[in-house]
Amino acid sequence: MRDRKYRFVLYSLYDPDGIRCRLEAMARKGWLLDGIFLSVWRYRRIEPRALPFTVVYDPEIGPYDPDPTPDDPLAALCAHSGWTLAASTGPVQIYYSRQPNPVPIETDPVVMVENMHRMAKKTLLPTCCLFFVLAILGLAMGLNSLFTSTVAFLASGMDLSLLLCGVIFLPLSLGVLAAYYRWRNKALAAAAQGEFLPAKGRPWATLCLWLTAPFLFFGWMAMDSTVQSFYDFFRAAAIIFLCILVEEVMRKKRVHRDRIRDVTILLCILLSVGLAIGEGTGLVDQLDRKYSLHGWQAHPPLVLADLKVEAAEDDLFCTGDRSPLLGQFALWEGLGQGEAAYFQYHIAQVKCPALYGLCREKQLGDRPREDSPSQPWGAQWAYRFTQAVTPHTYLLGYSDVMVEVSFPWAPTPAQMALVGERLGAIRL
Image (cartoon, rainbow, N blue to C red):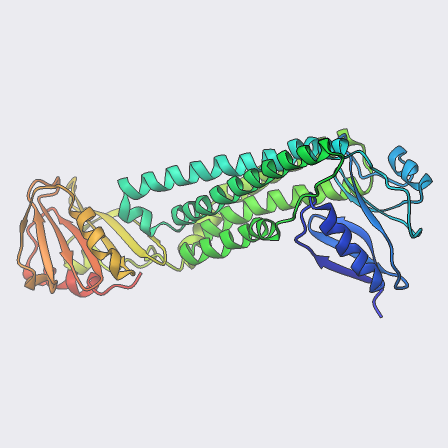
């Protein structure tokens, strides 16, 4: 029979009644709270009994202060009144009593509301403001990319992920801030009447915050399956998680606050430098080229050699991107014999049919153009841009693919047919 139990809980630390009811119910089942790490609560087995609990807020405890012990002044004062420290996390301390009707620790509702507000100014409110600013930035950057580079935006898993996070965080942060200040105004009015109005927990807000990391990871990976993207996400997640883990462990071990702060900052710097060195070695780029799921970087679908045209040595560059909405791939290859000219093409596979018309409009833009025969390309429609930098530049339309291709020479019918065969039905 296990003597320990771990539970992931969604109770807000600003919901003392919810915490108290939860812990009293667990005590009646024979489980007593023994420790808290982030949102994971640890219980130890006891004889089932009714135990009263209470939540105390100590706003003097900062983010780098070690956890209190039963010998600390507040805990000793509570012990004198029959309360025992069960667990703590930051400025929140949870006590239980083996007496059926213990003396309340806090009785002044004005002080209780003020302590919660002082704690919120150090934790909840700055966090919500940070998420609000990040949401605004994400939305602004995403919408700017959407209107200025529509095709590139729709094909970018990172841009779509950031925009979605902005859509999530903006109402979430505003909702939490509005709910908190609505409670605070009501609580101050109730405190003036000698009553304490407890805050109501919102598990959905806590759940949204905890689901953000896996949402970003799996969403980003599904949209942008490259080693580079995985490494970027892993680097940020590893730095954040390890710094929080080390900080929490040192706080539980009651290391001095200055050392906790210094070690956390130093660890963040070392991890950032170490992981940056890992990228600087070129290993990530090599793995990206070898294992990229969306690119044709290693084996482009069409090069000058396929068109029976001499190419310059080591003068080829290609790139690609994809998302659930759209995939794109572009290639530039220099001509041989010292010619300063490039053969190039850009492919856009529209995976959402509703976006095909929008992408076609954005690809055409306001560039001067004329209709071109589509049969030689095996396309449904074709345009030739009359004032392009490269003289023979065409935009070709297939069932769900658009290809913009530029020739420094007049393409032959055989080359046109090869373009349609290789690029018109490509899957990205």
